[in-house]
Structures are given as C-alpha cells and as structure tokens.
Length: 255
Image 1 (cartoon, rainbow, N blue to C red):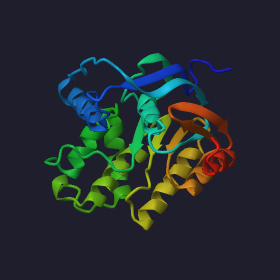
Image 2: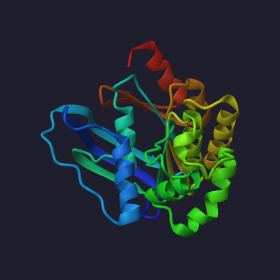
Image 3: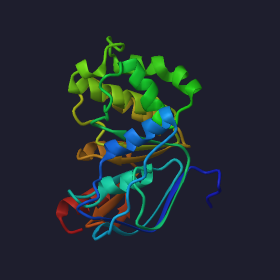
Image 4: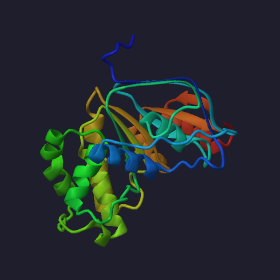
C-alpha cells in the first residue's frame, strides 16, 4: 500500500478539454515559472469555455521505481498527459496527485531567453524547475561538463539549435528529482550525445526510488528503458501491460 512518503502519481477520472482559444504552449509554463523564480510573480491563464476533449476519464497509478511508457498515435493525448503530470497544465475535472519532485525533460528544450549566457540560463532554468540556489551551485559544473559546451559564457542566441537542445537536456537530466517526465529526449541529438542521454537514463533507472514516464517514437528505446506501457487512443487508456505486449497491439492497429 502507498504511503504519503512514497513517490507516486495518481490520476482518478481525469478529463482534459481545450477550446481553439486555449493553446497548449509549454513555453508559457517556463516563462511563468522563470518570472516567479526571479520576480516572485506569475500571471494565471484566463478561464475559457471548454469544448474539445483531449483526455477522458483517465485512471492511472504509477508507483516509485516504475518506468512507464506512454504509447499512442498522434493526437492520442500523450503530450497532454505528460503536461498534466508535470504541472504544466491542470485537469478540467477529476483528481491528480503527485508525490515527489518532478523534472519534465523535453527533447527540443526550451530556450526562451536568448540574451542570457549559457551559465545564466542554467541558473534561471534550474530555479524555474524549483531547484534551490545551493543545488544549482552544486550541479552547475556537472551540467556544463555533460553538455560539453565550451563557450558556456556566450549568449545562447549564438548557439546552434543542437547546442541549445543539449543545454536544456543537460540541465533537466542532471538536476535531482524523484520523477522524470521524458518526452522525445533523443530527438535532434547526435549519436554521441544520444549515448550520453541513454547512460544518464540508466543511472536514474537504477535508483529504486525514481519514477520514469517516457514518450518516444522509437520502440526499441521504450522496450529498453520501460517495464510497463500505457496505450492511449482518442484520450482513453485502452491497455496497460508490458511494453512488448502493448507495442504489439499498437502496431497491429487493433487497439
């Protein structure tokens, strides 16, 4: 039985709706949190009339030590589910409980302050993710070393897209957390950096207290890193089983 001290994720009858006016911009989440981290403020989204269901009646429990793949076709609700768990978005109805510190890891990164140097961006981004000043100082050099960015004190607007992605991934993968939400983390990285990402995920995976929730279009990655898979179709969970079994149903088109 779960206790309050356990790292866990619990969704009960969760529904998420959007209108055409309500955009699902991840960038707004980080800008809001960065503003809060620096200035102590944020602006709430205006409420809207909701009409389009993205997720419907989701019941899901993920316990500490579980490594879960979210499988589904485009617009099945995968990214929305990750955003709800990460706190980027809120359910329209139902209850969502998360115990433990979450780090959302997005493959394409989120460089929204191009005038900052790489080092300054590490500080601001880590603060936006709820990392203390002490931990930021503790992990800064490890992040720089992992990213292999030599010109870390150059403004990020002069970085290539690949270098920006590497910086964001290095921050989120190296910071301490209980729950890692991994959304296409191998996307756009070169072969060598993909190997580093895989090695880091294996380190996280080896900790029995950590939770991994992963979305990837690469089935071999899901089979390698996940011990459980959730199949989403049209915003509904249709299967919850071992990754191999779920992917077999997914590929058969009979879900």
